[in-house]
Amino acid sequence: MSALNITQHDSSSSPTSLTISLALLHVFIVFVIQRFIRKRYRKILPPGPRGLPLLGNIYDIPQTAPWVTYRDLTAKYGDVIAIRLLGHPVIVLNSLAAVNDLLEKRSAIYSDRPAPVVSISRTSVLIPCYTGSGASDSSHTTTTGAAPVASSGNTFNLCLLRDQRNLQELIQLTLLNMGYGLPASDVTSHYADLLSDMDSGVSEAYHPTIFYIPWLRYLPRWLPGGTWKSGVQKWRLQADSIREAPFMAAMKLMAIEPSVLTELFGKLQSGETPGLDQEFVKAILGAIFTAGADTTSGSLFAFFCAMIIYPEVQKRAHEELDAVVGPDRLPEHSDRPSLPYISAIIKEVLRWHNLVPLGMSHRCMEDNEYRGWVIPEDATILANIWAILHDPEHFPEPDEFRPERFLKDGQLDPDAFDPVTLGFGSGRRICPGRHFAEDALFINIASVLHVFDILPAVDECGKPIPVEYTATSGLLSSVTPFQYSIRSRTSIAEGLVQEALGEEE
Ligand code: HEM
Image (tube, rainbow, N blue to C red; front, side, top):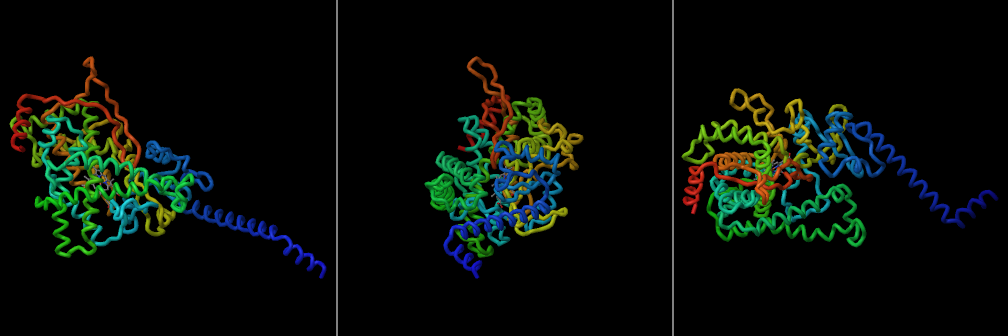
């Protein structure tokens, strides 16, 4: 009895000891659950560096060129690596076999995208989730099957000759014409500014910290860690403007030129595509414009860089063009089968400089087993495109720009590993603009090489400014800016351009 009294007395008169006991119990339970989860995942996830408690591997993966670090980790862990970023599993596929096994063969459950914590647009600029619905498929088929590149290489040359406009603006011009049917004259630096504002907004909104710590969204904006919220309104407005401005301009003009817009409106009116409405049409066009401009111009910029560093490649391309196209005309799309060296240059540009080195993240939609591991639902999947296209087993001396690796007996080698498909992603989310991009690269590269020598810029003493190939890091990796100059190869070539200029005007 007295013992009972003592116990009753203790518990009622000391509420803090109960709280402490409960707190300790809570800590113990959390600890056991964490150990259990960690043990379970360590067993079933693919191998990878161990990382720190809670933080995971955030200190193992650098911000600069993480694709190189992932490739280096394969020596210890194999081609499929799991890392954890603040508890979130990320699976990196470093071989073509793994990419094919998961993103291609199991595309039914590997085609979603991880949802960003903050949606930057009412209907996102990039088509975000995979539903398998008619509308999301329509974005792919329409873009993929879009009319061949609307602008000719001539326009590109003329612009270069006329005012040395930047490559990015030239590709934007083409996309606005192909996507919205907007005439070249409607292209103003306004769209370019909107696009560049939105690009920086997207980089901030998709910053890994915000991406992988979902609870950051609940922090008030005045607390450290919550300050990113003040940018959200701005990013949303930027994303909305890039969807609205060219769309409204096209509607005002009542563009009748065949374009992706007219094709989608045709589908909308016929009702053949469930889920397709005006907002979705706007989103698809916004995606084409935003995803197509920097990528295609980025590849062209890489091509300019390679031509300066490897003048012997440029010389061989000139010889092929002189022999096949001749001095009296500019190259056309129909010349492509007869220009294997130019085609090999395009493949090598896409391989040598990967615009999207880790592809775009995919999301695994359900737990599934692979090679004895379990890839958990919600895991982010990255395809290390850079590592695969720089694997010396397939591409000896991978850092060298060497179009010859795709040729055999002067023709494209059908047995060579073609970087084109992988460079544009995999499975059901493969880049829908790949045919457009390839066509644009062909006509622009062939035309520029036919007419111009691409040379390094010169300094005030007339000395060539050396060009070195380096690239930026990020979702999109660009060749770091360098200066170049162009010189007409012959007066006949210059005459051809002037003639075409007259025709255009
Ligand atoms: C050299 C040029 C280009 C490269 C290297 C490139 C590469 C890629 C890659 C790697 C992806 C991710 C695919 C995946 O998730 O597996 C992608 C997606 C995408 N690309 Fe491209 N792309 C290029 C040009 C273009 C162009 C010109 C357009 C539009 C005309 C375009 C529109 C898109 C869109 C809309 C997506 C998102 C597709 C989706 O989420 O379903 N791209 N691109």
